[in-house]
Image 1 (spheres, rainbow, N blue to C red):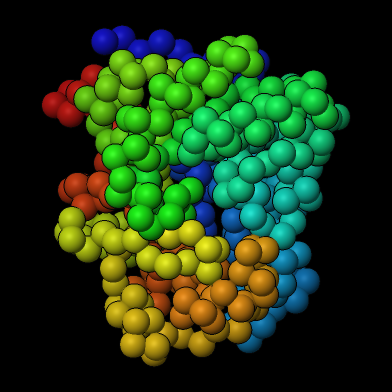
Image 2: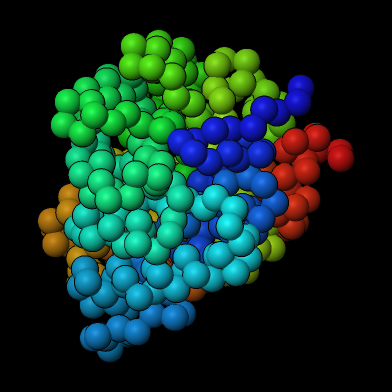
Length: 365
């Protein structure tokens, strides 16, 4: 099966594979730029740019973690990220993933527009006001992430009424993805919520509003999975975990090794301060949290609104910003290592070019 190019707004993605946005620091300029350079869609994560090497903090705490919202997300660092990505991929389309749940959503959206990103992807909530912040940049494509036809209906109805705008594409994410899920713990295991059963009803909802592409995400691993998604009606796929297994991925070598060392039974759903379950590798951190012996929770970064300035972090036993940052820096003892349900299948680290060749032509190519 030959893949058709993916059209998202005014942009053509020659290989219809979207590299999932992975924060904190897993998909930054090196990975996103390399993916776009090879003809798929590279996606920057806007989470925790205060940790990016080019960032200049206005304040630091004693552990040099970015202090408060305005430093956890650094505008200067984000612009540097986009600039560094462009050095790799030139004028090919690039996207950014911006969580709706962050405290500075409007500011980050506007920064993305000004920095020259082509496509904005948003999940972790229903971005009903997303077009409001991009009105001065009509060429930027807007792509919400949903987990049901009902969610897409709400977005389309609100966008059409308020802004006379519809999504340029929609990402449908099933419960096998890495990181936070758009489902309850129980729903993650029910048949009706699995990705293959979400596509058809969402395709029907799209038809009621016009015609824009559907991108399937969550548990997509190889060429066979991609073809299955296309047969079910998807126009493209999003893959995150598979790209962690590349030399170009911005994650530390220790992060990659955690996945290489993991077994199927190590990959679990955890409670998260965000309020929804999150999937990652069970490590020493999780064991410590279960014994109520995890690292201190100080809410230095004030990263996401649902955490209520550390209240939810204390309830579940860890600060998500600090623990993701430790994973990015390769600290096995205190890091939170997100991965999709297939993360244990990673066996080697290869180049982005080689990975895309396998995804298009088969594993033996």
